[in-house]
Image 1: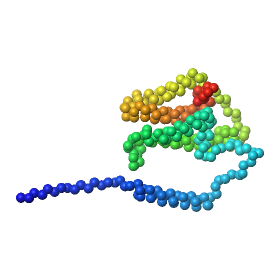
Image 2: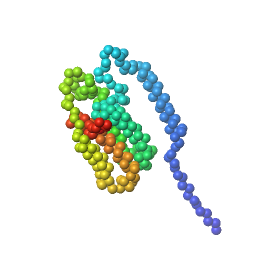
Image 3: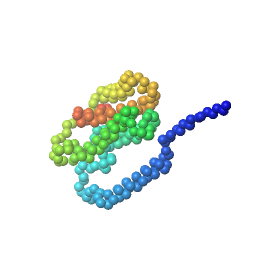
Image 4: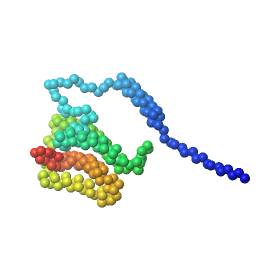
Length: 239
């Protein structure tokens, strides 16, 4: 008696495709359509160029292009070395470190907010904050870089802003160190496994960048609401 075994063949469906040509070809076609659309749009609508510059009449306020207005607005709240050098460097280094700091495999190949709440929240916060700076510099800064609400008319006759003052140096150092110390220690108390999951170096770098972002907003509020110019003021460095 011959016994034949029936072997069931299970077909594994692979839902992955190669980036070329499936994705790259579509992106290339989309880029062509967008380029053609921009060409037609630029032919119909003139660029918003202003009048020729007049050396005898300086522009007031003199504003940078819109994509640099965030940095120009940051100069109001920080020392030039920080707003013009340190802050952009931190942003660039932070963007470079993102792939190494965020090693969460969830969300690769599909969109999800529930599985990546921390990353999405931080990104949206930084993105909106930067465009708020651009909006303030574009629409709310008038002559002599004075602040005007949207319903106020730009005029050279505006109330003198209150005088600025610096924090006492010991108090500023204590507050600055306490802010970063609390920001690094408190998350470990509320979520004890975060240091184990992230690792010490990755945790310190991530929280350091996040605290610097939050501290930038706090410094702006201190300047606008309490007329505090610098938290730490020395002959060599001002923060």
